[in-house]
Amino acid sequence: MRIGMFSWESLYSVKVGGVAPHVSEISEALARRGHEVHIFTRRGDFDSYDRINGVHYQRVDSDSSGDILYQMDKMCDSMFDRFGAVQRLFGDFDVVHGHDWHPVRALKRIKDVYSIPMFLTMHSTEWGRNGNNFGDGVSKQISHLEWMGCYESSLVIVTTRRMVDELKWIYSLPEDKIRIIPNGIMKGKMRRSLDAGRVKERLGIHPLAPVILFCGRMSFQKGPDLLVEAIPKILSMRPDARFVFIGEGGMKADCERRASELGVKDACRFLGYTSGADKEELMNACDLVCMPSRNEPFGVVVLEAWDACKPLVATEAISIVKNFDDGLLAYIQPESIAWCINRLLSHPEEMKKLASAGCERIDAEFSWDRIAKRTEVAYESILRPPDGS
Image 1: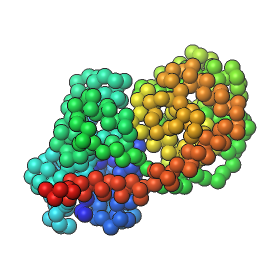
Image 2 (image 1 turned 60 degrees about the horizontal axis):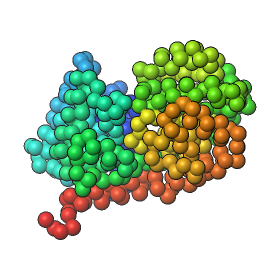
Image 3 (image 1 turned 180 degrees about the vertical axis):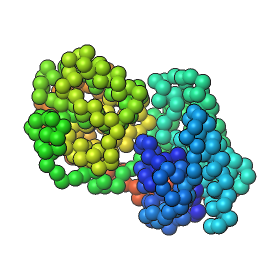
């Protein structure tokens, strides 16, 4: 098949969050299976065209003025024009596959003009990102684009059962139009051999102090404030514990202020944006990863923690974790998060057991080759339905 992937981010263009590795790595896995994959994305600081790891990158210039809706409208115009030029050069596409709401307008135009089946992966919803409400006028328009993308698609792909229920409830999407295909990771992507003590010392942390790592957007959805509120109860049990927060977002300043008010600022390091290499270093140097999310459609940080063989404390919002098997699940409240972290810090053998169980699930369930095969089957169910219609 000739497949067009559409996303506002990728590993080899503009990188924003967890969609970037998903788009690039699923595309590479599909290319390994013999398909011709073109990623249509923003150019950023890259050339307009590259072929990387068997995948064609078709990058478009984007306008950074105006609000996010204006920027994405302009991006979609450029993507539509670029798609027409690429199709004339390479031949007809069999499938176009978008990721989240950003490229929906381009996908709809391509579907209408070229009659190509359209697929959409919904990684999250505006409702979930805004604390289970539809937010302001911009958020409502984004929600409309999500609805339109789901309505226009032949199939909608989600990563968990929780997202199925969310889309059914928010957008009245029929379940037979949804396929669950999880996120993935390349085994060994995060694992590094390093001196954890030296990494801690560079942050002004004692090399033997237990480090709890938060990795993600500093946003209401990801719940970094819940972890900050839990810190006093953790320090009452382990006064040597230290907390490292990596990621940018609107809640960063609030979390720093709250840490000062609670008298725990000295135990915290708010590092903001970190490079991929620094993130991998911290993931391998920490003793425990915490994901205090209020809403989490999947949680790629779970896979990254398991790949680095680190124990995990998450909230019940994260459905892929099996409680007391490959991680601990807390209620979405600081007291419960503190209880889980204290339990693990007090039981190092349990930490090893949970980390090992999570690591074993990577090959069994979350390899990109497995996920690419399931994605291929989803495409074929529309292109070549079983009844031959």
